[in-house]
Amino acid sequence: MPQSSLKDYLHESQLFLGRAIVSGTLVILALIVLVSRLFFLQIENHDHFTTLSQDNRVKLEPLPPTRGLIFDRNGAILAQNLPAYSLEIIPEKTRDLAETIEQIGEIISITEDDIQRFHRLRKQRRRFDSIPIRVRLQEDEVARIAVHRHRFPGVDVKATLLRDYPQGLQTAHLLGYVGRINEKELQLIDTSNYSGTDFIGKNGVEKSYESLLHGDVGLQQVEVNAKGRVLRVLENQPPQPGNNLELFLDMRLQSTALEALGDYNGAVVAIDVETGGVLTLVSKPGYNPNLFVEGISSRDYRALEDSPDNPLFNRAIRGQYPPGSTVKPFIGLAGLEYDVVGFYQETYCPGYYQLPGKDHKYRDWKKWGHGKVDMAKGIIESCDVYYYELARTLGIDRLYEFLTGFGFGIPSRVDLDGELSGLMPNREWKQSKRREPWYPGETLIVGIGQGYFLATPLQLASATATLANRGHRIRPRVVATIEGPDGEKRDSPLIEDVLHQLDPEHWNQVIDAMTQVVEGQRGTARSIYTSNYRIAGKTGTAQVFSIKQDEEYDEETVAKRKRDHALFVAFAPVESPKIAIAVVVENGGHGGSVAAPIARQVMDRYLVDTAQAK
Image (cartoon, rainbow, N blue to C red; front, side, top):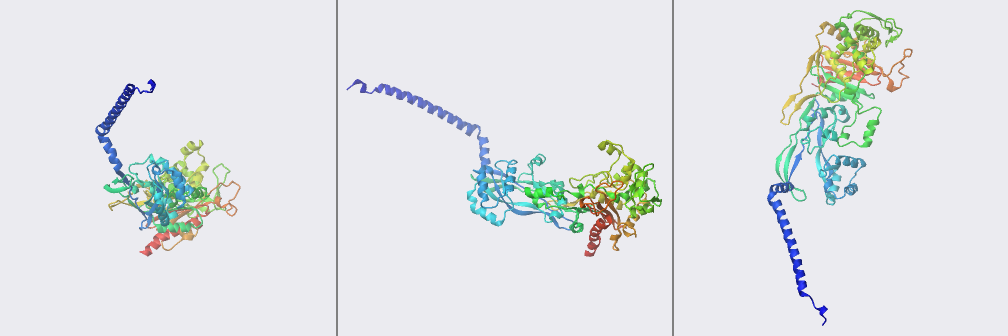
C-alpha cells in the first residue's frame, strides 16, 4: 500500500482541537455578551422596561367632553350634538393605505373630497392616530362595513357626536359653526384639553364662547391585549361637559325679519333697550353651517365664495354702510346741545345748498325744496339742506366728538368675534389715511350720513337704543345666561355707560320729531303707523355711487346693484321703550317704503303678538 494513502491522524487531531478551541472561545464570548445583555435588561434597566411593558398593556385614552348646547330665549334649540357614525383609519396599522381606501370605496361611497380631507388630516396627526375617511355613515353603510371588517386591519367604525344646527341658515351668522382644528389653531389652544377632540368654534357665538362651550377633557386607563383591543377599564376620570348658553335671541323675531326681507339682501338688528340683549341679528343671504362641521366640499365652498350675493359675509356686524339720514336725529341733538341752533329756528330750503362764495350745489333729495324748515320738519321730512347748514355750523370736530359718544366709528364690543368699527371721519383720520386736509364740503356730506361716514347695522341699532334710553348706553350682548355642568346658572354681565348729561328738553324735542316721522302727515315713514303702540323712527337712503353735479338719479334706469340702500332705525313704544331696531336693505331704494315696513313687522311680532300670546 502506498505511503500517501495513509491518513495523518495526528495532524487531523491537532486541526480539530484548534477549531474546537476557537469555537468554544466564540461560544463563551457569546454567552458573556448574552449574560451581560440580560443583566443590563433585567437588572440595571428593570424599572424602565417594566414601565414600557406596562404601557404596552395599559393605555391612557382621552375622553372628549360633550359640547355645550345653545338655546334661544324661549328654549328653542339652536345648536345641539347628534350621534353619528364615522369610518376611521389608523395609518400605522394599515399595510397599504391607498389600496385599503380603494377597496373600501368598492363597499361604500368615498368621494375625492373625502380622500383629500383624510390626507389633509394625516399631516396634522400622528401615524397611530385614528383619522376619519367618511363621516355621517348611513345604517346600511355601517352594516356593509361590519361584514367586511375582517379584511381591513386598522379600519373601524366609531360612534361620535357631531354638531348640528337645526335652524340652519337662519342663525348661521350669529352662531357661526364648529370645524376641524387646523394647524394654526393647534398653536393657540391647550392641546392637552383638546385630546380626542377634533372640533373648535370657527366664528360667531361658537368661537366667542369656545372656552365655555368646549368643557374639560377626561381620561380613562384601559387594559388592552396584544392586538390593541380593550379588555377592561381600570380607571375612569369622566370629562366635564361644556356650559349651555341661553341667548337673548328670539327665533320668532329672527324668522319674521328674514321673511320680511323677502328677495332683498341686507341686515336687521333688534336690541332689548333695557338689557342690551340682541333679540334679532339677521344677515341675508345666509348659508347652511352644517356643511362646515365635517369639512365642506370644494364644490359647495366655491359656490358660496363665488356667489355675487356673498352669503358668507356677516352684514350685521361687518357690513359698513353710509348711515344716510338715520343720523339726523343725533346731529340735531348735537346742534341743540352745543347751542348752535334752536329747535324752532328756521332755515330756508330751495332744494340745494351752497357754501359761501362757492358755486357747487349740494342737492336736497326734494329738488324743488322744503321751504322754511325748523329742526322738527328737518327730521320729519328729512330735509338735507337743513342738515348741510347745521353740520357746517357745528364743524367736523364737534360732530366727531358727539357722534362717537353714541358709538359711531368705534366697535360696540358685542360678544361676537369679527365686529368691524365703521368709520366716523375727522381731520386726523383723513390726514393719516389720505394725506389730505379736511374740506368744508366734506363736513356737509357727513351731516347727511354720506361720504366717508360708515356704520354697521349693529352700531345703528345700539345708537338708537342709547337714544331711546336718553343717553344711557348699554353694551349689546348676545348671551343672556350661562348654565354650568352642575345646573347652576349665571347671567352674563351688563356693562353700561352714561353719556354726558344732556338737557332733558332736547331729548324730548328730538324724540317727538322722530315720532312724527311715523305719525305725521308728511312723515317719511307714515306708511307704518299703527294704533297698537307708538314708534319713534327715522328713514334713510344711502347712495351706492356718486352722481355728477349735472346728473339726476333715475332709479328706473340704474342697475339693481347700484340702486340706493334703504335704511330705517326706530324704537318703541315711545313712552316706555322696549325694542330698538335698525334695518338695512341693500339696493332697496327708499327707507320709508322698503326698510320701515320690515321693522314694523319685527316690532309687531315682539310687542303685539307676544303680548297677545300671554
